[in-house]
Length: 252
Ligand SMILES: Nc1ncnc2c1ncn2[C@@H]1O[C@H](COP(=O)(O)OP(=O)(O)OP(=O)(O)O)[C@@H](O)[C@H]1O
Ligand SMILES: [Mg+2]
Image 1 (cartoon, helix red, strand yellow):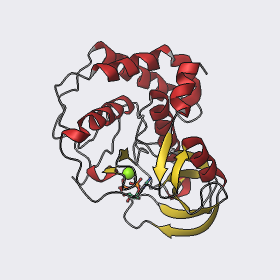
Image 2: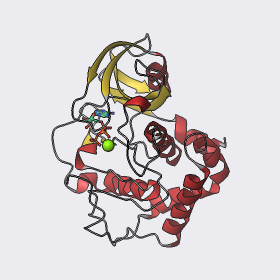
Image 3: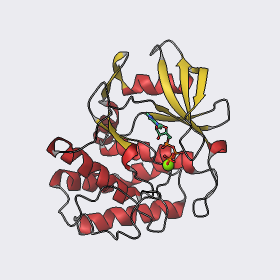
Image 4: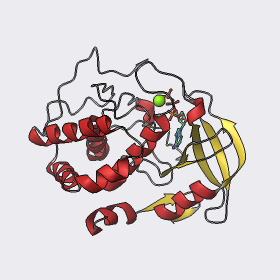
């Protein structure tokens, strides 16, 4: 991997309840921790568990385990692939340097293979006001790029320990058909900020490496359509005007 891309992926620390931790350490801890305790998160539509992960790197580490086996069947997404989309989204956010998705790994667990993602304790307050604008613009662009079919308001929150904006639940992404459903409407019709356009250009410049990184988790067609979305956003760098009938998440 080129230095430019590798740097984006490695220069990153997080403030956690256990103190400042490097992402690489957190990912390792998520990957090797023994599940010492597990509790169902009762409101997810797929089986989701909070897990206490015993290991020596980050004591008291809590992860969110979403096993493939617990994914509710959907008519439009192939069965058992949501955890791969969740992980591909994480990898993409890392190569873009848009670090709003908590560190995530794919691993085995008590109910088989799935994702384990760092649990982020949310602040109980809405993300309103200019302070959040640029972070939300980035996430809105990420959702366009990944064709996120499930961006609910509860999937965006501020972390209690680090005050950053975090986004979770990226299992319904990378479909080949347009399926964007989102609560991020504030930017419709506005130009995409130049720094974000530059990030997309850089992504395209590294197309071969990024393709290799994502290929184990997405189909060839999904990847081809992903690159088409990327090129279309660069050709017309404007947040599209959405259709209020189609583009609102289920249950909103
Ligand atoms: N990384 C995380 N940090 C903190 N809480 C999380 C995290 N990931 C998931 N959760 C919690 O678990 C719940 C279910 O997770 P998630 O939304 O990813 O699953 P889902 O089955 O797709 O649910 P939904 O029906 O909301 O789409 C979330 O609403 C949130 O409360
Ligand atoms: Mg969901």
